[in-house]
Length: 139
Image (tube, rainbow, N blue to C red; front, top):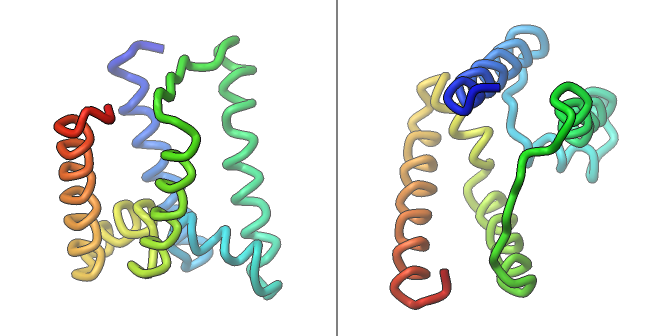
């Protein structure tokens, strides 16, 4: 797939899936909430949550089957840094009442003021983190 077309198609598919989830189920596509539903209470949404997580896990396999190879990804950070980063993301997700997908895709589409603040916070923090890591020689 063309390097410029892939992000457009991917973004359109994410938007379509988030829209369909809202229209058909009345739910926002927030990954942290869906994963929490799988790991926590086993309510009426459990089957849906399992199907959503299964789709996330099977998506790369579908990509591999369609295109014949996986995209090259290079992670140059150390394992301790990745573990700390993952824990901070999890903490921030709970503290911010949602994740980047929930706030950035579903929340902004619904014009949620809380999501606007959350996304601005995500972006500002990301920018500051990259600057600090580059200036500190960690990246």
